[in-house]
Image (cartoon, rainbow over the protein chains, first blue to last red):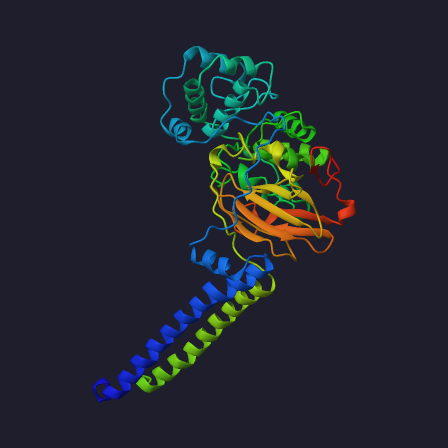
Amino acid sequence: MASSRSSSEESRFTVLAASAVGGILAGGILLGFLILPVVQGRQAGIDPWTAICRSLGIAPGTPAAGSPISTAAARPVSRVSWDEGTLRALAGAAGPSPPEAVAQCAACHGDAGIATDPTFPNLAGQSAAAIFKQLHDYRSGARVNEQMSPVAQGLDEADLAALALHFAARSKGTMDATARADRNHPVAELVLRGDPARGIPACNSCHAPGSGGPIETPILTRQNEAYLADQLRRYARGDRGNDIYGRMRGFSAKLTEDEIRRLAAFYAWTE
Amino acid sequence: MAASEEDVLRTEIRWSFVVFAATALILISILYAGLVHGINPPSNIETVDPKTLHLSGEFTEGNLGTRVEADGGVTVRVVTTQFAFVPQCVVVPTDRKVTLRFASPDVIHGVLVAGTNVNTMVIPGYVSQVHTTFKTTGDLLTPCHEFCGLGHSQMWAIVRAVAPADFKPDAQGRAACDGR
């Protein structure tokens, strides 16, 4: 069948295809390097010749606006930078933790990372990046606590990473299934889906393990209820401000007191 | 029942018209947006270190929002982060050239100010800069339009365009939605 096609038919196709490709190319050049730059340049007050040169990339674009540096007093936000060194320190297996530091932590946070008092946070199974960030912030003064600040200030960055890895590797243990939070309760809507009208993202979009949010966000499940509620209130009041770019200060301020109590209870009793 | 080669050819040609029509329609809408609404990608390339964005320089927390610069130009600085615009509301004057500068410390976000030609991606490592003049007053919805994670659908901001007479920056040239 194919062999019965005349050669004139084939050459006609070649010409047709070549002119189609050529036409599209010419049209693209005309639109991209001539029409669009000239028309858009007129709207932006740029003469046609400069606009064409800029579209071709042989004249520079709008000069950057000089990046004026802030003279405002910096708020005490975190000094942690998730650079390669920090990430590498937290990616390895737990190095030798200073034993006296572990003992010091265990006095409040428990040997196994389960806090001795419900107003202190549990550390077992927490993300190492989250523990490291909070220790680092206590050390730099971005977060202040009369017990934690002096402890963190006595340690160096390698100790902080070792301690973070040590407690991250502890097991949370199993939870009594009968105590589990009701996932059909209205507050679960905030946890799982958020509230678009108020601009509150689902809590789980950052705080569920492996959610893909910012690396420093802690895992909240099985955290102590009293501790969680207290931290949300501190964020809402602005007493705690080491959340980078005020993410938690912003979201917490939108929550009602009732929501804060219910959210804390929900996470405390969810695995 | 096998179709003849002619039938196959005819079907292919018919579908190729559909493909061409769809491509042409998309191109025409891009051209229309470019020529009539003045929408174009940022024309400058400016890099910034996303790892230290919050530590020093232009995009520290205290330097965000609207500011009238020494030369009288209005600049708005916004950080797009998972899953919020910081600040969530910015105030701008109408009928005056405004420069919007966006940066991201984490992942790729997008910014679209409804009803204006502000429409850009925000890529970690780069500053996205857009110039515009707001023509109507009101609260303009500004959603993130680049999927950025599980909280993407709750990520939006407000650009509050006010008449020049109502635009009242403080002594440092700063203006914010809550009147601070």
